[in-house]
Length: 245
Image (tube, rainbow, N blue to C red; front, side, top):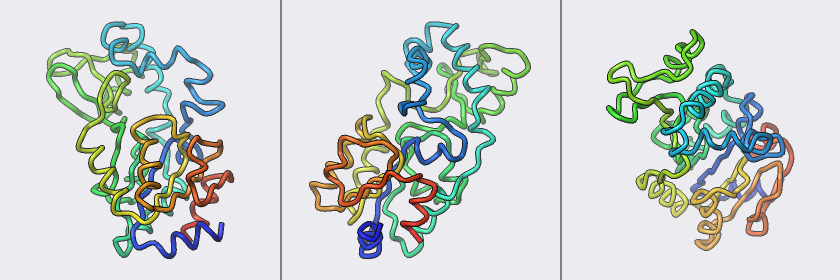
């Protein structure tokens, strides 16, 4: 803990990369952990695959059931989310790069201009045909009223979350912003990610090659632990506030 604290104290600029693990204490389950949705139900991965989602009404119905039952819309930021807000003071934070789509960093008070959502945001919907958008709670309320596959209110098109699905490319501007944030940083603080999904996982060796110190806080080992100056397995909601206090 003291090694990590010293690295953070001495850093002029810090980049942060977060994954699903930071939000589990807020009641949002992860995907790839031991109790993750895709671990327990491999078929659930289809709802996040573009071709399956667009062509199969049953897959869309399952996706809408997941959304209707999701704890995201009632979730509150936890102590780890709130602790990261303090890094913005004194302009020390170069970027808060997240693989999460829950929007909890912004709800905690992080500057939206510093939050780089690599995989999009699940709190809004988008029509695949006319590109209309709106708050996801609108569609979820329609599911609660009995619709299994709510369509766009403007042209009847297929509606989806504004998230990146499998078979889709990430927004190049977001990738560039993430790389720029790491390039400017003396320390990369990695929180709650298995570091198995690229290109986000590649930010760790990229930071290491550039001479930045890497700190990893995650419940399970990652393939990049050997590159870190400090690794922590304790609960994220306890470790992150302690590191940043």
